[in-house]
Image 1 (tube, helix red, strand yellow):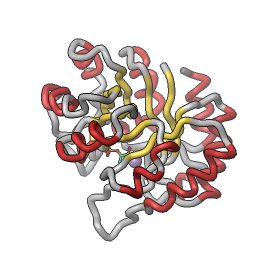
Image 2 (image 1 turned 180 degrees about the vertical axis):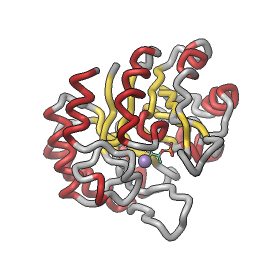
Image 3 (image 1 turned 60 degrees about the horizontal axis):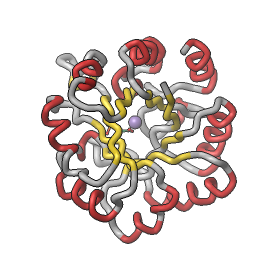
Image 4 (image 1 turned 60 degrees about the vertical axis):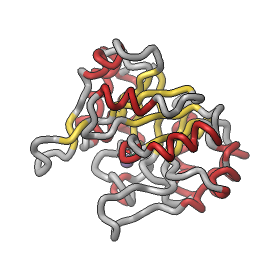
Amino acid sequence: MFTIAGPCGIENKELFEQTISFLLSKDVKYIRGGTEKYRSDPLSYQGDIKLLEVVKELKQKYDFKFVTEIFKVDDYVKQFEDIIDVIQVGSRNMMNTSLLKDISSKLPYKKVMFKRHFSSSLYDFVEHSKYLETNEIWYCLRGIQSLFPGEQRFQPDITDISRLREMTHEKIIYDVSHAACRHRFVPTLAKAAKVYGADGIMVEVHSRPSIAESDKMQQLNFNEFSELMEDL
Ligand code: PEP
Ligand code: MN
């Protein structure tokens, strides 16, 4: 089982560089980080797509594969095509068929990590993935809407790994961070993903989770991540 790790959002060069050099020392090849962020609250941190410039600089210095969400395929994004190794389609865009068609026609050779919408059936998830007809798809489960959002906004859909396995031969990634909602629940879920036979896990890691601009409650710090890797 391989690991995709990195911060929820890239806040600045310094913090992202700390995380990259730490993760490379742990043999993580795929590093994630959002530049634009989808947030329910429009007044909260939205990210900044210009941070792709920072990633471009860091890619010249470090050897890693970069996984990031895109919202559209425009000239600006095309300019950074070479530094994005895996395009993330976020859960809220699972049903954005014009984005999916655009990715398929304009970025046909890119791998796409396709995230399940938190209220989608597995059937709809797989059907929508067919819009990405030219791309290699990594199917990513990330937890579903909880019945008790006051306690926990999303809840794990871990058993759906088995069901999805009957529906596709492509890679299945389990996003342990969004499914767990809290960093203390991440390690058990990551081990469960391994038992269920996920091809990979995605885990949010931040050098200082308490100052993260998004998803601070679920990101692992470096010690927690090191322990998890040893346990796995
Ligand atoms: C993310 O991966 O940081 C993210 C926003 O995920 P999702 O689209 O699943 O909410
Ligand atoms: Mn996140």
